[in-house]
Image 1 (cartoon, one colour):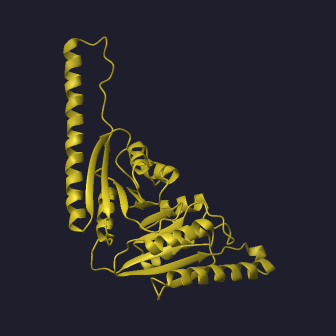
Image 2: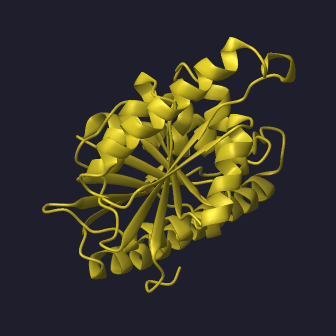
Image 3: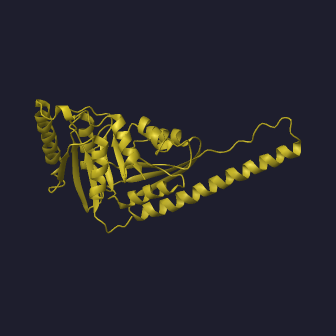
Length: 293
């Protein structure tokens, strides 16, 4: 990710409670100093309804939502650009993100606004799976992002997550916890196997587990160096256990404002275009989740 390129953020909104939470979070988020904000509002009307009073009502509602979002965002981005489109929500968001070359899409989770119940959970999930860039999904508003947890698993997506966070403007006291959770291998039951065989298998399993831990520590050290150079205070932890459980546990134990994960990690079962850790984070994280691809 080149540092010289203008950073572009796309906010998807429908005026719902979840969308307003996403707007508040976007305003207080530590975007790079050179960042542009864009807004997309989708209104989809069935063909048979296009000549009815519904079309006029949705037009008015969409324009109201667009103006409200622009007013809220203008405090930070006076030149915010708003685009109202007549197409399905997922298509509208993905196309607009592609058109402007967005770095991050910001959206709420399970909203039920007036514009075709725009930001439902299924729409949020659909955008995350199809987005050409990172997606910040907001369940509740966080007005100041200061403490961040990042999942590190050695994947290219996780490395891009680190690179994206290095582009942000660290707030005063900004701190990152790098967490790598290793699913260690267990030796299979071998009660009937010869003693020598059991010893060989046990040694091999130990060798594999030690290798995983060494690679995890190297990846953590590399990420720590990059983030510290970008101005973040960094803590690091290598744990043994299920990655999703460890990440959600870390978010719950500390005062965390943001969870960052790669879109598709190297561990867990992959669900369609989204890794199981990212999928679980969306479902279970009490704080906004930034999913990076």
